[in-house]
Amino acid sequence: MDVKYINTILETFNVTLEQFGVNNIKRCNIQKKNKMHVNLDVSTIICFQGAVQGDIALSMPLDTAKKLASIMMMGMSITFMDDMAKSAIGEISSMIAGASATKLSSFGVAAKINPPRVIFENAEINGFETIAIDFETDLGKIELNIGLNI
Image 1: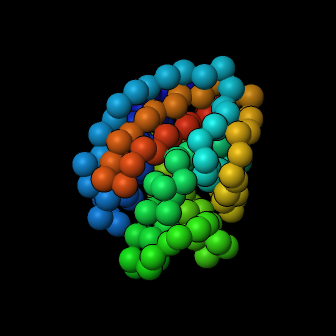
Image 2 (image 1 turned 90 degrees about the horizontal axis):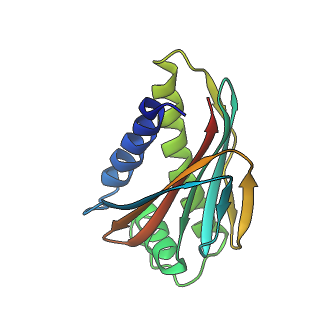
């Protein structure tokens, strides 16, 4: 996968989180995985189709997910991940994926995104080589997984 595509997704990740007041976003670790799998408490996955095939997944500890859902829900206190909190977590991944797809189109790469899936388990998402980037934020750890075939 071309680094310009990865950088495009990283940029939209940072900009989207910053729009919601998430600060001190620091890239901590980058690893290459042979396939996309997630193993943190809460993950939200967006599937890309068209000229872009694969997925982007945000994976995080439960505490981080609750804080992120709270921000998405205008500061509402989140004590457990109900359907509304899951929807909020899914929405931020949709925003990141949508902005990424729009920017990828400027490179002549057409992409369609599907609605998000939110899961609470370890899972193999796809068989594409994946770049996993760990971020530390004011909310806690968020792992961004990019497993796309472009």
